[in-house]
Image 1 (cartoon, rainbow, N blue to C red):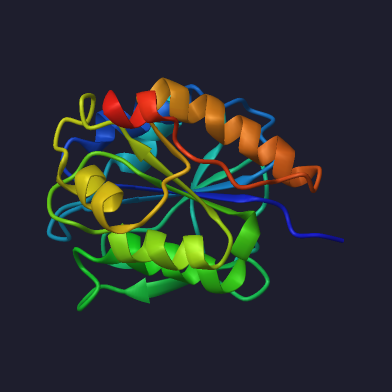
Image 2 (image 1 turned 180 degrees about the horizontal axis):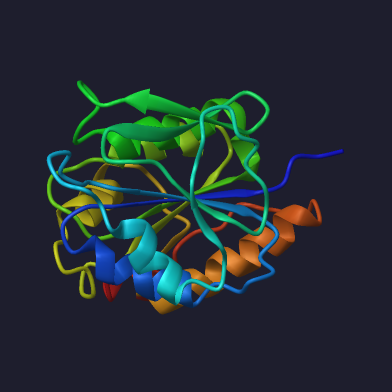
Amino acid sequence: MQAHPVVAIGASAGGVEALCKLLHALPADLPAAVLVTLHRPVERESQLHHILAKVSPLPVVVARQGEQLRPGKCYLGSPYRHLTVGPGLVANLVHDGFYRGHNIDLLFSSLARNAGRRAIGVVLTGLLKDGTQGLVALKEAGGKALVQSLAEARFDDMPRSAIAFDGPIDKIAPVGELAQEICRLVHSSARGHDRPLSASPSESANS
């Protein structure tokens, strides 16, 4: 039995709004596990789980160490225990420290090792360049790379870095179109018909 697809979404500054919009557009019966990483301060309790649960058709849960990541659910880590994926598509929670500010790269790289062609990495709004190296690893492992358009991103550092350094991005688009592409890729992958894509010239130009 083949493993199900996994969608990993990373965001930083301005990311709560973008995550809400993206998750709201995904169907409740999406046959993929959805993993969300957002840069969050560790000194106060995070409300991200409750915020996303209000808008997401998918159940939103805080992952437990060693938990099997199931399709049809959205998983979060915590500000001080970052979500990554271990062999067999189980949650592997990494303690905060060196990886603060690099937890999107951490998640994407773990997916490259353990999900390969069944992984879809999504970079949304944010400052600096977290996610760039992780998307490189994902693409090299045969996964797909999607990036929020620069025109829509509230802070375009992370999308711009991903577009500049990661080679061919499979889709550069506003969040609503990224949701549609996630659904298309997930259903194609679930049927075993996934194939490489490239952003059209118009998409790149309008980003």
